[in-house]
Length: 454
Image (cartoon, rainbow, N blue to C red; front, side):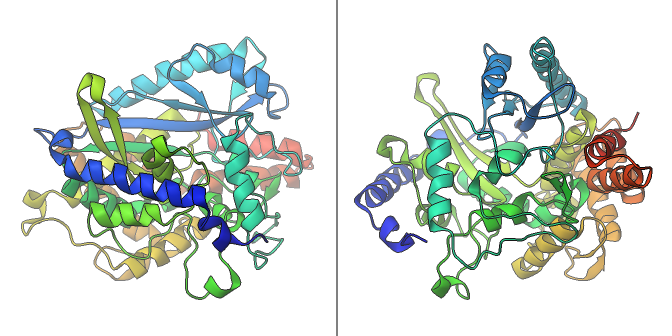
């Protein structure tokens, strides 16, 4: 393990921290630029997919992936050499159906480009077929520099086996190339609201994880965890020293306390390693490698007189179908609207759940999905399905408050409380196939098919 303290005190890192402070201060001093005249929910979506061979579902060549997205202005590469990310323009929908329509248009173009090259786009929180001994990577310097930094500085305390049912070796930061998420971006009308929404996002993130679990299989193995994305990230990117183990939390995803204000948020970002050293982009680089379940981003387009403060939810794995994914985005937006609607609560905004209970919820949801107990927002412990039934009702009320119609998407999530999450369904299909005598590869394909409701 290389000396992390020496790396963080390098001239380049200190230069980045100084540049970040200056750029963050410029944001703070110019809040008026970011203020909006109304607090409508303008929403943008991002989704990551594995691009696979249509015959055997193995990852396609990096060059083929690049051809698939060439000319698609809504698509970009990610760390995985067979990974694609798409994004929508921000919109203020009157109905969740408008978000589905936008995603269908995007995916149709993506599928058309993939099909002519013998490829398809897989909807899964992991690429279950990737051999972890040869993870395909995108050929960009940052995708070598960032994982390489964590591999060089990973603590020796990280064990070589991780999993409940079958285990994998988590000691490789390139594992980020085999996990896929969908993010919801919501604009905020001012900095105070941005911080409030980021905190509320963190509070409800475990509820979202429990409902949406879809990242159980890695390297062809059933880890037994409902959604292994962030637990795996915590292991693969753990650069704590032996001295810090009992004092410092794992950096990925988790918050030890809610954000006090935007200055507090910036101070936390500044303390993380920058790794990439381009001082003119210090603000974006710092926030880009601040891997928390909720974070605040800033979009600056001076030429268009456009400045946006954006709250991003990052916990949901890519879902098996577009409607189910839209349902999760709708749950988040509705639940957020409920949290800040004083007309519903009668006594102001919803109180935040004690963060230690949120973090207990986070661990339980990611590891156990629906088969666990969760703290409700009243601070009491209940069966997860009981808590989530109430949370879904709050989201439905919140969507009404936000003026966004739900023509049945929340019903898909209510059904999961009875039928199980995508991870549950994949495990059921996989295990049934093995019992029928299918080999592991065929069983994995069966599991993926089993997730998708016909």
